[in-house]
Structures are given as structure tokens and as C-alpha cells.
Length: 270
Length: 295
Image (cartoon, helix red, strand yellow):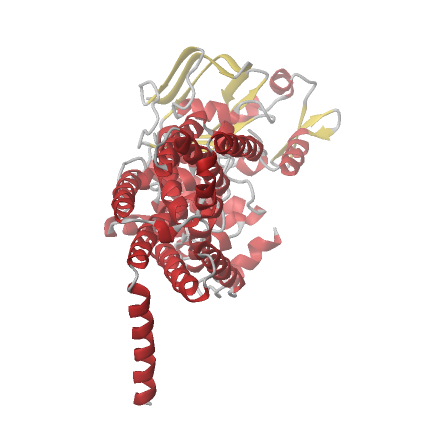
């Protein structure tokens, strides 16, 4: 049974066409790496899956229905994270805001909620973050906290937008490992966007490569090839494989690395 | 020892009896208390959302409202309420395009002050009251005004309680809140209307130019000193209350303007909170943090 189904979907942001008549289907329990050059529409595609953006044509179905905001079966880690000002809010209280955060009235943290948060944090080895104030956490610690938050409602679909940003190499591996294990154990479907393919290589089932208004879903060895990527990048791309690593090169430059550096300089992009 | 204590209490008693022998001081203490609590609590969220400048702009727009109301023969308070609430709602509806843009807000508040001046120009009899609108006149608050403040405060706090949960969620994590189905624009519009009401009340005590003393100083200090929502809200309200009451006592005995005393206290409290050395978090495992800092 497919969890996400795109049927000739076109997406536009403002005047810009991001996706044009893309069709693909993702099955339950699949770990999908979402890749593509900057501005290829990774975030836009994720927003459409969450029901935050309606397609201009075609049909998106998630769990067999038209996606709607506030679906509790979806866990989400957004890419643009608002910087919290001088507030000394503890990790526990921070992610607790997302529990029923859409309901009116006063906030309250019940004992059962507290336990749930504690268990989820323990699952990803971040229990110590519960009592730490957010403004004292490093980027990597915050990221793990947000990952725990995304897992909180026992979702059936995880939408993770660039969860590896601001993690060092070791914590990147830990994060991927955690997501993969949870994905396998609970048969959760995962959309995981990233800048670089190599870290994800051993973990993902298939890759969804975006670019040039197109989307190609398939196994990495079928998708990450010169001809396919040349079409997606709109440039002459060579794919070099060496010792289990893949390098996507354009005129002798590593495309993914250039992208990445560029992105670091910009801070975050939309 | 005990005689010293007795002398001390006698002096305090004398001070208090002296001060409260004037009815206007009774009223001032009551009005200041009501307003301080509301300002401290609403201001907490204003600071949390990083919208203090928007709050400042609302108060300036209120100046035009107050003088405009004088021009057509209404009480300045109603002009303040009408203008600030209308402005707050429009800012909320315009969304991010304006409510977080410094330049747009700056232009709006300058324009509002300009209009305030124009209204003053055509209603010169009001000029004496202009200082009261700008810098507050808590000693002139009468019984009916206290009742109005009490009513406005109740409305403000009830509305805030109603939206508090999605307000916090969308303040800390707007992207996620949107995905979870929080109507961001509605929440932010209602919140700015709440801020408008609080600003109108606050302006009765410290004037439109000094609303920061109660709506930003105490909450900013509280957020540096506390780690949880409720303790932060409580401390913010208590600090605001302490400022206005101590300010009133100081003004009574020095004959300095009340708003000045409150402004000084507000600055001192914030300064103390900033200068306080950061608490050493004994819960953070140094090894873990060390590894990540290197990245």
C-alpha cells in the first residue's frame, strides 16, 4: 500500500514552477532520501505533503487522502527554525509546546505527556536535554531535540527537512541511524532531505531526486547516474563511484559540496 | 534590638498612613497594580515573540487616538483603546509583511505622532493634557477609571488565556505550528489586539512614551531569571507591580514624577538581570557539549 502518491502533480511557489507533472509513489515503511540542488523544491515538496501547499494541477494523496494540515499521523521537522530569543526554556517545555499546541486555552503539561517526552528523548539518547535550557544547547543538541519532537506523536510518516544541518559528522551518523532504526522497527515511512547523498547511502531504500521541475524516484544505482542527473541539473553531470561513495561532478567540481558550502554562507534559504 | 524594630515599624506605619490619607494615592495604588499585572503578563509574550517594537508603535498610534478623542470631546482612554486595537488588528491581518518590519513600523508610528500633533494643534485646550497622555498621570486616576481599567484588564487576560497555548507554540516554532494546523494569522491578530488593550491601560499609568517600562523591562528581566512559563509570568507580574508601587512611594516622598521613578526602577531591574552571572548548568555533561562545540 502506498503512503504517498503523486499523480501528475505540479507545484508552484509564487510565479516559479517547482514541479511539473511529477508522478511517483512511496510505499509504507520506505526510507526515502530527498536530494537535489538548492532551490530544486525539496522543502516545497514536503510542504505539499503536509497540506501546506496545494498543487496547481494533479493529485497528491497521503494515506489515501488529500493531505490536510494538522494530520497527527505525520511527524515534521521543518528546515527554517526560528531562533528563540533570550528565553530560558527547558528542552522538555520546548517540545511540550507542540503537544496539542493547536488547541485553545491554557497550556498544561500532564504527567503522561511528560513521560512520553521522556521516553522519546531516551529513545534517541538525548534524555539529558530535557532539563537543559534551549539557549545553552549547541546546534546539534537542538537538532536532536527537534528530532525527538517529530517522533513524539508516534507518527506513521516522518517528514524531515534537512535534519543533518548543523550536526557534526558523528552526530549525523547517529541521527541517520536513529531514524533508520525507528523506521524499520515501527514500519514508519520517512522522507529525509539532505545535501549529500553519501551519508545516506547505506540507509535509504530509495532516493527521490529533484531538479529542473522533475522528480525521479528509484534505487540510488538507477537514479544517481550521469544521464539522469544531467537531466535534473540541466548540466553535464558525471557520477563517479569509488569505494562505496558517490561523487556528483560537473566539469570537475563536486556539485553537492559546492552547494553545501554555498548554503552555509547564506545561513538558511527558503 | 526590639526597640529598633519598633521604631522601624512605627516609621513605616507613619509613612503609610501619611500616604494613604490622600484619596488620590489610594486610587493610584489600585490603578497601578491592575495595570502592572496586565502589562507584565502581556509583555512577557511580546518579548517572547520579539515584537516589542510593534508594541511601541501601538502606543504611539494611541497618542493620535487620545488627542483625536479629545478633539471630538471623548475621554482620551477611549481614543487610545479604539486606535490601538484597530491598529493592532490591521497589523495582525497584514501579517509578517508589517508586524516584524522595523521600517514599516517606524514610519507608521512617526505618522501617528504627526497626526497626534495635528489634533493637538486644532484642540489647544487639550494641550495641558498632552503631557499626561505622553508621560502618564497616575495621580489623576479616579474611581470610574479604576473600574474601566479593571474591566479592560479582565477582557485582556481572559482573551490571553484563551489563545495562550497556540500563541506559545506559534511563537517558538511557527513553521511546525503552521503544519500542525494552528491558524497563525488569527493567533497573531488576536494577540496584537490584546497588546493594544494592555498598551492603552499601561499608557494611563506611565504614558504612551514609557510603556516599555512596564511591558518590556519586567518581562525581559523575568525571562532571564526563570526557566519555566508560569514562574516567568509570575515574576514578570511581580516585578512590574514592585516597580509601580515602589515608584509611587518614591515619587510621593521626592516629588519627582512617578513615571520617572518607574522608568529608573525598570532599567535597574533589567540591568541587574542582565548582569547576573549565568547559572552554571550542572545537568550538562561537559564531554558531550565539548564535542559538538568543535564542529
